[in-house]
Length: 102
Image (cartoon, rainbow, N blue to C red; front, side, top):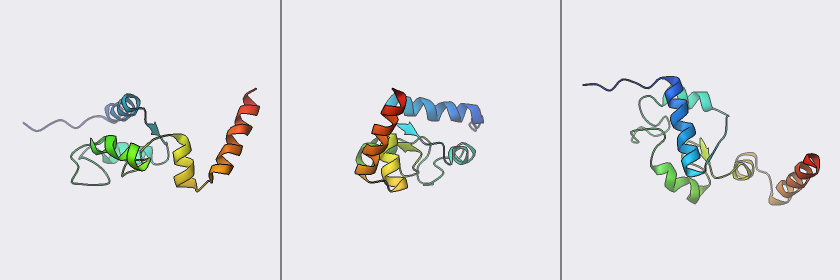
């Protein structure tokens, strides 16, 4: 019997649960793309049978993100690798954010 495809809400829940379980961060950029395209497996690598895929658990700690760049080690890792922010600039932004919160 053929498996019934998950609803968009079920896929969103699977992504959020996986991230929460492993302590990963999800960056909203492109999030809807993953939800729409993960029904038939990993949207970025067709050899992977599902999204979230088990390889992400290895890739995120090793590379800072999974292959698809949906799951990240931290928001700082995302800013550094995706936005090209230097450590000094990131430290300055953290200090500013801390001052703003006080």
